[in-house]
Every structure is written in structure tokens, then in C-alpha cells.
Image (cartoon, rainbow, N blue to C red; front, side, top):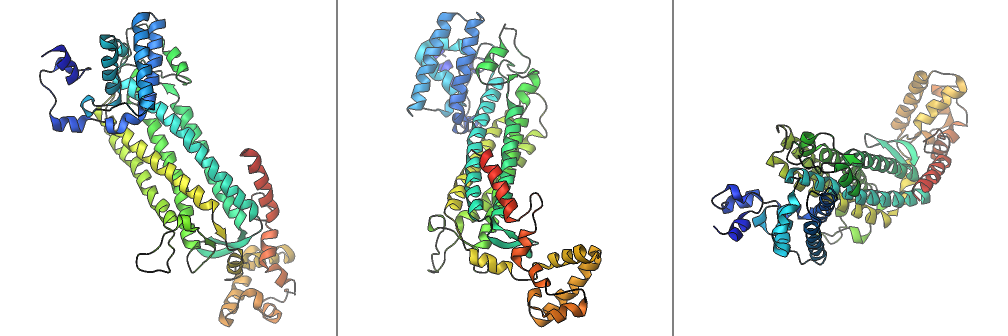
Length: 466
């Protein structure tokens, strides 16, 4: 077999084999359809690796310059969409090295000095996730700003707050929106934590044992934007904690979006009419001309399953793997890329949908004035003004609710005489206590729903999100 055909068979490990890989094995083994997304990370990692090889006098300056020239050409081809990926060469690393060989000849063979695909892919993957984290962080921040604008416009818009999906106590719509801003803030914190922990560079760990070449891992680590090199070569190539953490964080963020999507589906329904989703984020029915379906929210609600599924898939892949590297880890990129794509889309759609949402304040307030929603305020009133225990107050108000139910009215519609039959201490102030306006205004504890507190939180977030 000629040198060229041997090189074409597999430029990295073909020398050990006397026949070519079967077509079906090639299909199973190839990951280029997935990992081509790491092309820039791979090229940048190679560039810094070669620069280090030159500085450490491991490879001659002439050869290194030739390699760097070739990598620059490849990078430009990728940017212009002219680079052709081939399944024959398995993955992104081998596709680039094969192209480099076509461009500069045998000097390309020096590129892989003092490294393995094991540490190379771990480095590329970490850099890709690091870039993805930056993108997701910006998209979450955009959502936070959108939600904050809605909260600011509705800081005193009264709505029913729910527990068990039943009317519980009056809150403000602005307060409800701020709840999601808090969730998104934690999502951003988790992304920061993932980035902080993954930001150690595996490059130079080689296959699993390090290398005998006098490399400078601290230099390549610094030049690739890492905080430090990884400290154990075996862990370096087998670790996928960073991918698990990324998928876990993505799953939590997607779950937050799904919870809101569920609320939007409920709120837009005929039984609520709290909001209206714009035509741009709604669809129609093929048979019922009157329908406006909240499909954007429903699809966001569904996509979280895809993201949480990737997390448990990677857990399942990793649970039985001995140290160090096994080819099973080839499947990790597909899972992470899928989770990122879904979450990125969910964030973009949610932001667009919420920017165009219409809040039906009249329906919100009307709903807040039903189903004994200020009963807790009445119990608190008895505790504050008559020194009753809360349990005694709870019992008294419970009897009033039972009475109102038997008369088919709300508490605020009861005659004063009915209140006094159950407890003579009641006077006409009871009607002020039972108003929804009073209910939200008096809840001025830190983090409470009173418009004054909501305004304070809004101002704090406006400063944080500048």
C-alpha cells in the first residue's frame, strides 16, 4: 500500500492496520457530523499548542511556522463555509489534520507531538461549553430585562396568587414576574459556577499519562483562556463532570421556562383570560377557525424533556466507565449540543413572546376578588387587634367562610351582623381588611408583594442588570 493510500485510510492510526475500516464501522465510529461544531475551538487549541512546541524547541520554528500557516488557511476556509468535512476521517481533529497534510505535506505530522486526541477533545469540549455558557448567560439576561420591564409596568396590578392552583392570597403581577427574575438569576449563578470549575486546561495530559516532552502546560492554558492546567492526567481525559454540570444547569433553567410556559397556557385560556399572547407566537386550528393556540408556550413546556433527557443519558454513559478514556465519551457532545440548542431556542422564544404579551388587568383584579382570597388577612387582623392565637383566629374565619359559602357570597359581601354572630369583636373595619387593595398594601415585609416593596426590588434589579 502506498504512503498516500495509507495516509488516506487513517492518518493517525492507520499504520497498525492492514485493511481499511468497514463501511458500517466507519458509520458507527464517525462523529464529524456532531463534533464539527468544535472546529474553531480545535483550530485555536492547535495554534496555541504549536506555538508552545516552538517556544519549547520541541519542534523547529520552520515546521511550526508552516503548520501555523496551514491552520490559518483552514480557519479562513471554515469562516467562508468552504471547508469540507469527511466521515472517512472520523472526527474534527482528524479532518483538520488531513486538510493540513494536503496543504503543507508531511510537516502536518508534527502537529500532534506531545498530545493525544483524548486531551485534545477534552480541551475543545471545555472551550465550546465555555463559549456556550457566555451565549446562554446573555440570553437569560435579556429575558430578565424583559420581565423586569413587565414588572415595572405592573408593580401594582393586583392578581390572585395561587397554591395548589387555587386562589390563595392577592399578589401583584409585578411581584409574580420578579419571582422568575430570581430564578433566572440563580440560573446565571449556576452557569458561572460551571464555567469556574471547568476552566482548567487538559491539553498536555496526552492519552492518560502525560508526556515525556518538555511542554509548558501553563503557557497553553493561559493562552487558551483557562485559569490553570488540570492537575491529574488521568482525570483530565476522563472527566466529564463539567458536561454533567452544564446539562444539570441547563435542565434547571429549562424547567423554570417550562413552569412559566405552563402558567401562560393557563392564563391565556378562556377560564382565566389573564393575558393575550400575540399572533406572532400563536397558531390556529386546521378545523376550528376561532382558535388561537398558545403553541409557543406549549413547545417550550415540552422541550424541557429533551434537555433533562440529555442529562440522564450522560449519567448513564458515565456510570460504568473505568478510567481513563473510553470511546463511549464520543456521545457526550451530541447530548450537550442538543441541550444547548434547545435551551437557546427556548430562551429566544420566551423573550420574544413576553415582549409582546398583553396583560388583562381587569380580569386579573376580578379574579383576585373571588373565593375568599383575603381570609388570611382577617385572621391576622384578629391576632393583631384582639390578641387571639392564630389557631383561634383561623377557626373563626373558617366558620365565616362556611357561612358565606352557604349564602353563595364572598366574605366581603356578608352583613356585619353575620360577622358578629360568630365573633362579637368584629366591627365595620372588617370590610377594609377584606379588600384586595389592603391585602397587597400591608404585605410590606422584605420580599413581600406590596407595591412599595415590589418597586424597591425593581430598582435593585435595574441597577444589577445595567
